[in-house]
Length: 158
Image 1: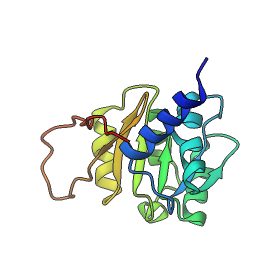
Image 2 (image 1 turned 45 degrees about the vertical axis):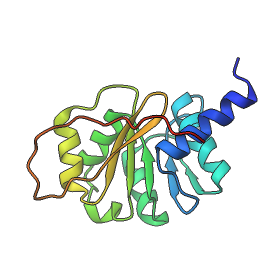
Image 3 (image 1 turned 30 degrees about the horizontal axis):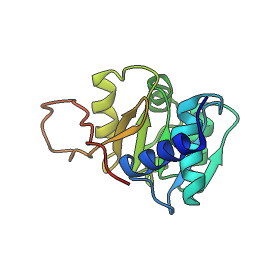
Image 4 (image 1 turned 90 degrees about the vertical axis):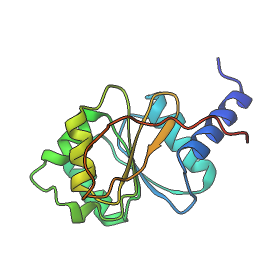
């Protein structure tokens, strides 16, 4: 059982490590019984007062439409959903022009997909999460692929 203090610490850690902002517009498409979606994204963003868009399921077409309609700046999804977004018939990078932060978890992201996301969505940051998010800085489109390591920032005092 988690105490209230433990949850507050979890939410604070996510906000700090994930660079969450009150002006973010966040798309939530995973079930809320998933601890990552609920306790790493929805609850911390609610605490900040950010705008949260909830979808019934992780449908790539609906996610693209919502991202474009609401000016979504942050999305968390497993690799299979990111791949579905990239492969969807309606995918156009312009539909995700406001996306600044993309997070994934639940399984390992194929290196090729990380590079494709960075190439097709320039200016977008990507990161991974299991217990807390970790940001991967954007890579300029002209840079060479040398590494796909995801840096994990040291714990920050709050």
